[in-house]
Image (cartoon, rainbow, N blue to C red; front, side):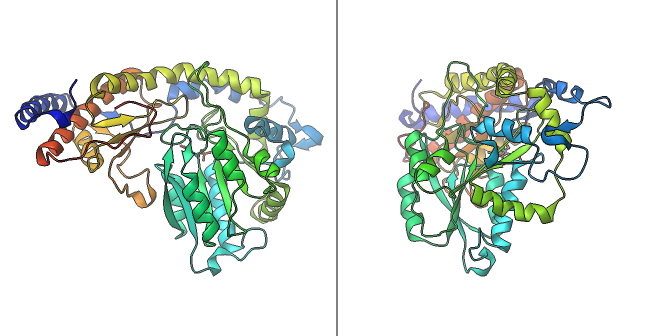
Length: 442
Ligand code: PLP
């Protein structure tokens, strides 16, 4: 296949006519496709239904230490749930607080506490003129929504396959006291599926920050979400690295079983140093008289230990792999060599990230919508919904069937081609994509 940049005007016009015909035919099919939802399918949720059977009216409702899970108390979680969630992210139970079903709520609370009361005795952020967060991009829109909600200024940090640009991060945090945090999805990142390298994790742990109350928001949402048995990313333990570096308080780590058990009924956890957790416990005492310990017990009785979680996640992988591969096959077959798009081939997580020609993402998403397919809004993967180059598209293969995913990707590539041809026709000078940092192909 020839790259579009090498086609003459006549060839581009000819191609455009063909593509427009195919697009009209696609529209006539009245498709109803959705590639926007990063959530588990019904079949995936059904795999965890055994969780509903481990407790009934005859069950022993006592957790370790004689804690009756039906009653108040046990503010930071039952002991066995701390162990299970700690094992999930390789952290000691005493460094874990177990919470209700959404890790996003813990993240929101951490920012909120920092604003109203300050981090461990530091000046509350609400008393400061300016508070800033670093945001590796593309990234998770709901992280950015939290910081935007609190009027925290967000600074884009480019991602690479090894993690965010650490030179830039080191330079910024060492010089600017108003930078108080950074959002990280260190394993199978949303949306690219990248995992931070050992060097990146060590550099994070050794950060010298101007602000004493700077914290790394380490959202390990996809820690066991591998797609393959023989191709699995590994991530260094940030808490251990921070401890070694003499920076034990630098990180708040988050995780949940939202994409292990039920997205609407899992359990979540915060892991950090004793100092940070003691600070958080002071707030929890006011906020609640205890979280849902019955669900914690249910999760422990069902999964038992990390082996139980790993076996369960293999079943998920068997279901998800085909969906990811359906997308990758179509992208590879239809776009490689054309110089109009590049994409990631992750070993795990929930997303594939695609970069198209600069200035084309919004038009492609709109064209897909016109033909019956919903994609995550262009720009959603950037703070303030603004992709400065208008080129990133997030693909979420987990919810539809592999057949639907293949049909959806067929339409996506058609729209990518159509919008790109128009771009080259408009401006024959349009620059081809810059040398990619992606692992994947043009
Ligand atoms: N963090 C990341 C990176 C995610 O992609 C998601 C969901 O898509 C979440 C957190 C949400 O997690 P929870 O359901 O525990 O709030």
